[in-house]
Length: 103
Image (cartoon, rainbow, N blue to C red):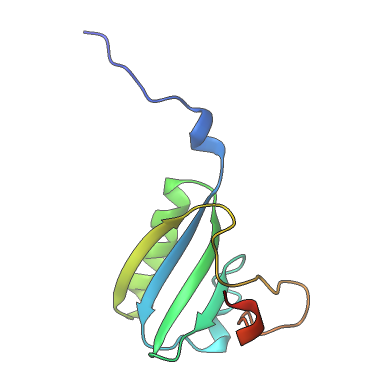
């Protein structure tokens, strides 16, 4: 029996994801989620937003969230260019967007 596999073209392109957690994540976790922007929302949620290289990396991130013990609200793939936060890597920032960065 012949098995058909999906094209591998998309398997190597990082996808953008938004992971929403209930509660605010402390700034000490910024390094643990390296490469993701951490945004603390007014409603008490935390958004982790950024590129995820593949499904294995996404599962690794979800494992870290589980290990934190914070409730997972949602995991959403984003279209490129639709993120509402800007990464502040290398700028000494907090990983949070100010209101002028939010659309």
